[in-house]
Length: 143
Ligand SMILES: [Zn+2]
Image 1 (cartoon, helix red, strand yellow):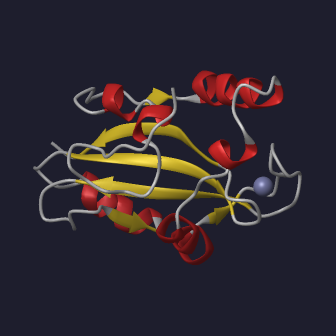
Image 2: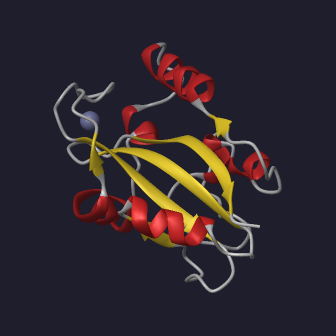
């Protein structure tokens, strides 16, 4: 069942349960790929088990981040089929804002990765047109 959640106390503006973020937290080390969960969500939507409102539920903050710090995927949205699909990278960890930092450059990513403290990075696919959003992958940084 889809419901709103938070990630380890972080209010991040997307659905932690739908995205499987509870599993992501604590699973440090190797990266985790969420393509299967993404496909399952889309297939549930196609079958009518999830409404468009449920899968296109990006909150204002996530949409804003998608517009200003998303990287263009140059592929159509799986839901509305419009251009405007981007990936937003969030990093949570020590010395980072509680709501996570939206990382826009490889340089900044490399800097966080070079730290002794461990942070967790999440890449979220967001459609700036309809609000479709899903976790794509996560991995530990630093340490
Ligand atoms: Zn869309």
